[in-house]
Amino acid sequence: MPLELLSIFGRTVLLYFTVLILMRIMGKREVGQLSLFDLVVAIMIAELGAIPLSDTSIPISHGILPIVTLVVLQISLAFITLKSQAVRKVIEGTPSIIIERGRILEHEMRRLRYNVDDMMSQMREQGIYRIEEVEYAILETNGKLSVILKADKRPMVPADLGLNPPYEGLPIPLICDGKVLKDNMALAKKDLNWLEQTLAKNHKVGVAGVLYATLDPQNQLHVYKKGENKKAP
Image (cartoon, rainbow, N blue to C red; front, side, top):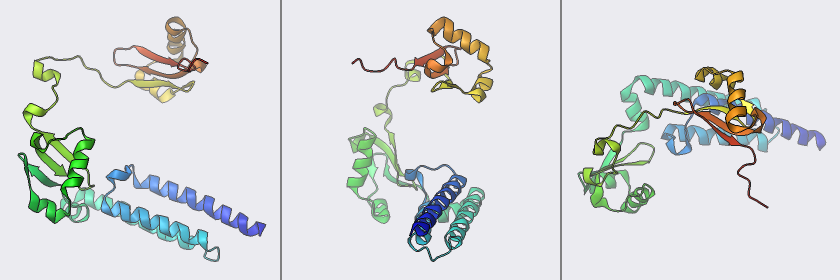
C-alpha cells in the first residue's frame, strides 16, 4: 500500500509540473479570453491528466503523450491563425455587432443565441444601464461585450477641455518585499548606491525595510515601508 500511495504521489507531481509547463508554453491568456479551441484543449488536457491518476495500471506516458500532442497542435494552429486571416475566422470566429447606432440588431442576437438579459448584464458590469446611451455594442469572439457610448454620453477627458496633461509614463518597480529588482534597476539606469542613499536620506529606511518601491518617469522614488499600513492594536 505505501508503494502504491508513493506511486500515485509521484504521478501527481509529474503530471502537475508537466501540465503547468505545457500550459505556460501555450501562452498567456486569461480564462475569459480563451478561444473555443483553447477551451477545448484545456478541458481535454484536464481529462487526459486525470486518467493515469485514477488508474495506476495505465502507464503515465499514455497520459503525457496525448497532452503533449494536444499542446503541439494548439501551438501549430495558433501560429497558422496568426498568419492566415481565413483560418482565424474559421477557428475563432469574428466579432458581431448587436447594437448599431443605438438600435438592437435582433436578428444578429437570435443568430448568436444571445439574449437581452445577457447583454444588459454585461453592460451593467461596465456601468452602462441605458441602451439609448450606446452607439455600438460588439460581441467579441470570447463572449465579452465591447460597448462604444454615444459622443454626448462618454466620460469627459482632458482633450475635451483643450488640456494637454504632462506625460505620466509607467512607474518602474525597484524593490519588492525587501528585494532589489536588478533587471528593473538596469532599466531605470540606477545603481544600488543611489537607491540606498535615496532611501536613507528621504525615507529613513533600508532596502530590507521596504515592502514596495517604484520610480516614476519624473525620477521620483515612491516607497511603501513594511509595517506602516498595519492596523493599530
